[in-house]
Image (cartoon, rainbow, N blue to C red; front, side, top):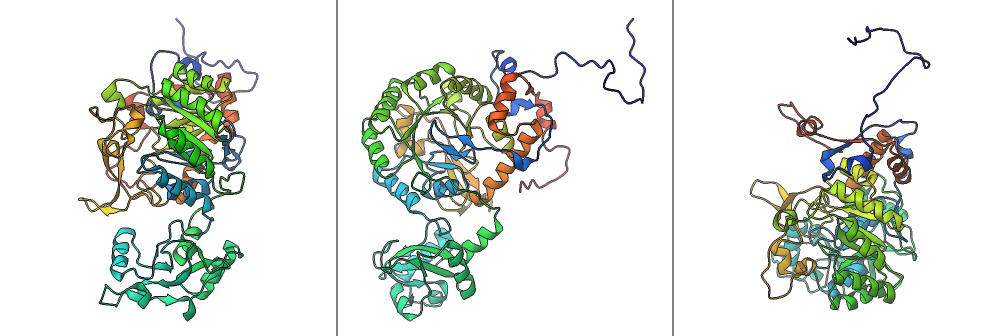
Length: 523
């Protein structure tokens, strides 16, 4: 009978007869070729050899065939996730944001213009009103946005002649709330401190801090309001991690993408957006393998070839190939994996997200086209898995819902928690506003929900979340021994990156367990 070798405390020497198991984990090709689809939580990667620091990891990646971003995270084109505020924030931290299209063409163009006109360091959405606005409007502003100070211009908007500023100190003790703001505001002619557009952001911040004021309107040579800097915005900036270099277009403006549908009217919308400087278009469909999308891709590549087009959503190589052959510059991968999506439950179609990303990315790589892993991202570990399985970037919806930059106002729920609304684009609420087009639903037909509506708790600012999230991703790459996305691809395709599936018990063990109580603080 074979006997186990006796235990020894002698250190093994390099020339000892050391043997290793023939199978110690699987290559990605072996694991994902068994006819079983896996989600991110189902799989776990083996650690590699570390000979570099986490900060040395380069996560820059292709967003589309022609666009590169420093931070491989983008916000989803959902109406409770991405409008101009989110697009500005994502571009400022090196990622990208895509405006949803569950709004009119004029509204979408307005958000695009806002992103392109924004100057980093200014308040993203300053409150501005006209001189005849009653003080009661400021009370409503306080309820909606948490502050009651406004810049007052002749037009009631940014770009109008600056008349003054009305802060809480000017109006909080005024009992007659029907009075116009012009009757109590601090006027430009009465010593209002302003900054000029020729100064740098750093110089303007220094002027504000030295003045010990709370607001600094920034004007051009015609005394027209260009932007606003507040003491609180400067404090927030200093407390957050450094954002790094932003994602800019060829003219030095912030990057902005947008989603459109595949209807005839969307052709005109795409041209109008492109005329205003749009950088990339997402064709937003829950099932992208359709003649409608193929025809739209071909049309857009002919009519506005300077704007990259991202097709999808797809989860199989057959779907992906048709869109790639039509000329797509990027692919959006995922179907039914989002936290608010019920497509797999209602329609019985879809795929586990880990498998979908791996399969589609392998095919897209042959066309030189990157893929976005859309859906199922809940933490930095999921981003690591998406990128190492072949995605160039992770598209996030629920992760960014409830942040300061997400559309909508905060309110206090029944449990006393501060929350924002979040809904799937397949929910009946979203469909009522027009998103049924992404589910190929015809007007007048019965609408079946493929998503839900709900709330998510306040998560703070994306500008704070993303830098920490990215550092977690870099640590994950370090643990796997990958110095970049390109290096991770080489390790994966060579079979050097090993991966296994986890049982339910292993997944439980991999999280927090056996605690009487704990508080999970991520950063």
